Amino acid sequence: MKSPCLLIFGHGYTASALVDHLGTEDWEIFGTTRNVDTADLLKENNITPLMWSDDTSIKSIIKRSNYILHSIAPTEVEDPVYEKFAEDIIARSINLSWFGYLSTTSVYGNHDGQWVDEKTPVNPSGNRGLLRVNAENTWARINNLPLHIFRLAGIYGEGRSPLDKIRSGKAQLISKPGQFFSRIHVEDIAQVLKASIEMPNRGSIYNVCDDMPAAPDEVLAYAAKLLNYPEPPRIDFEAAELSPMAKSFYSDNKRVNNHLIKNEFSLALKFPNFKAGLDALVGR
Image (cartoon, rainbow, N blue to C red; front, side, top):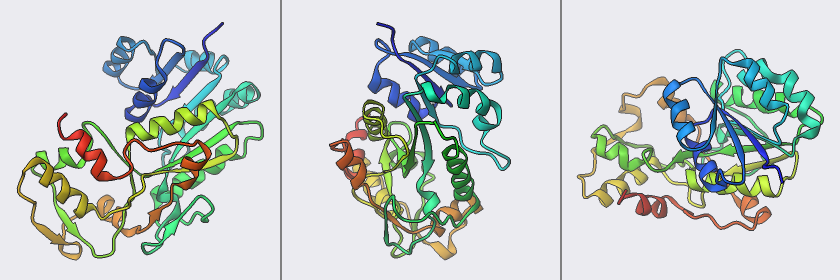
């Protein structure tokens, strides 16, 4: 029996975790990249690299893909994948079993610390969220596309966690009372994506986050405690010197509900809160 073909647009951190969960023995996996070193690494892991500039090769793989994961962020102009390959994906859509688009919870905008779920209307407060809404809508307009949208909270995991920020010596504990952020361990994103691939439900939208929204300073303080590092000094948000991008993160204050992924996929998160996630990472 022929192995199913998965094409990944933007083979990065999250896609790598998904491949680890799927395994390459039973799948034929292709991943796009702009980086030659990344291409070599993909080869070492039994993934066929496709250079982003090689339209011909990518189009040939689209023609035989059964599953497509799209994890490339939109630009100010357009969704890069749609811009280059919309015609090819539309032509293949009726033969696709699953098309996953990785979006973000920034599409909901600010809710002053209140809970949001998948039925909450999108209302982005910044350009980053607006671009994601536009990208979601662009793909949703393709009639036969088996679209699944995953609105990811802040991603952390090995090599990309509050522990690494503390170790760098550059962490700041920004204090903004009543501020909530939701987050998700990359391993749990991977198990959600795998579950969706195995149980597709076209047209679905999923919030992908853990059970415990928390303030960033609370998370960093816990990371410092785990590492036996001194807690970085606390700085009031109004007095903190932050980049426009960093400030934009603090403009959205919401708690994201994850009941749908757990109920639809009968799924238990491996790391249901940041403490469980950081506890597992501290020894790595």
